Amino acid sequence: MVEGEASWAVAGFSSGRMEYPSGLKAMIRGQSKSMVDSDEGMAAAQRGRFVDALHKWAATVAAAVALAFSLYNFTELQKKPEIDLALPHLMRIGMMGMDTHFYVQPTVSTRVKTQDVELVRGARLNLTPAGASAKRPVFYWKEVGTWNFDPAEEWLSYRWSGDPAPFLVSQEKPQQPIFLFQADGWSFQPGRYEGSLQLDRAGGRGPLSKKFCIIMSSKAADEIRHGASTEGIYFFRNDLPKFSNAKYSGCYVRETD
Image (cartoon, rainbow, N blue to C red; front, side, top):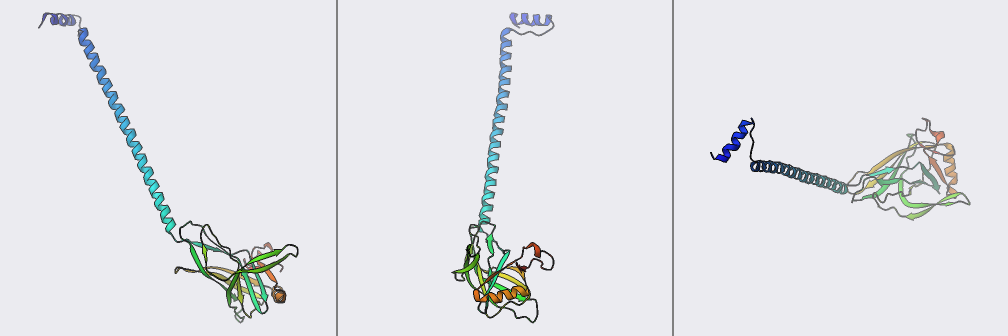
């Protein structure tokens, strides 16, 4: 042992604690600080890697959700449109000569947005009298038209606007055609009638059909027949409060009955 080293060692032992030369103390403090700095740097690097991984995970999840949403929208757009047929609260009936005219303006629409459209090829009206012996009318789709109202005369008249032809239905373009159906050589008799409006669709798809009923009073039947000479048109409704009881059960009834 060198004399200098022995002197500080002895001094340290003599005081009961280990003392180091000032140079050695500085070296130890420097090493300790370096270790602390190194630990903090490693912790900061780990935090950075975690944040980067979190950002990448969030971006991946967002991309996956966006892809799933896009695939869902694409699938929905490829679907065939499901169209709805809704009947109006008002139907009109009249006569021209010996032929009965039946006017109905349904709403044909779709609630789902698709790239495809629905093609309606034809329309049929079926009407069956409740009495077994009553003659059943045969209606055919004659044409489509428009209504003209004269406020001075308070008179509603019908005007032809197109021949019976297929029409397209999409979400952007719902349809409300005014169908004119005609039954040759037939007129209404008093009683109850069960009816249906049927729309035939293209592409091998089944028809759309809505049922309804009409209650024809003797007064209304006479009114229609007598109005044939003037081509009168008479309203029948299914939403009048005075006809809300079970007897009428939502049927169309002449509003003046």
